[in-house]
View (cartoon, one colour):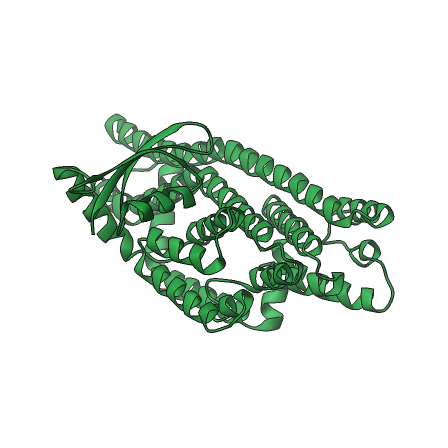
Length: 408
């Protein structure tokens, strides 16, 4: 299959140069236009890229082809489908273009199955429902609603934006907490090395010399001996505690109690609550604006929340609404921030509940980012002080012992 070099103008007005593989020049031009670009010049060439660049491209493709399917792959799929459907392509044509674009073998197989199901007469929502590990219930319900309203391209774009927003949120959280967690792990390793490696050897040396030891040095030696003597018990109790936690978390009642307890932990509870309220606002807003009724939207939104206590509250809220209560009054609870029912009450009164929920999601997303930044800023110096104090105390104890022996 020949390669074609092209010069095109992108949607942002910038000139783009590239190379693609196609059967004919006309198909190459169609593929470029499918990407939302205006073709300026296109010529056939003997290879995609030259020499070492071609080898590098092939190596990269071989590496990425075996990678697992990530959330960003689903976001890109929905964004590409939205763009191509808006340009007038049929759903099958759009899927075929996406199939050529993906380099991951696992994702390509899923797209092939989607194409086969749609060609066989299945609806898009039903085809996506055959892959529950990749497309959750929220996605399927939104697509099903879009099929009824004829706004599949709009819903595709909303889905891609929602996935990208959650990805960005996760990346910010991981990047903000990476350094504090790294410092904490270093502190633990340094502590274990001092207690089980350095101090016992130093204690043996001091005991051989004889003489009275300073109180700080004696405390350090006694603590190290105790830690070494009780090491089997420490390991056993720690392993039993972890095992008990796993068993409890896997049970329905145990996970409910643990998740409820996590919401009461300072700082951590705030982050979990803000994250869940962000998810609640955005998901419920998208579902309502897609045309789903409130009862069904609450059921789907509850499943999207990871915290079991908050999920149960939404399920209870759904039952209360079916009995005649409003959404705002049914959400009044100690684990729900007071701002949430107040803002929702305004949306119910004005008839703009979907838009209000979207603003609620943005509000708590902003608060979540601020809380993560604050946690990262306050944790770093605290951990540095803790690690520095530990190492400083050990050095001080050693120095006092050495000074005591030299004086005697």
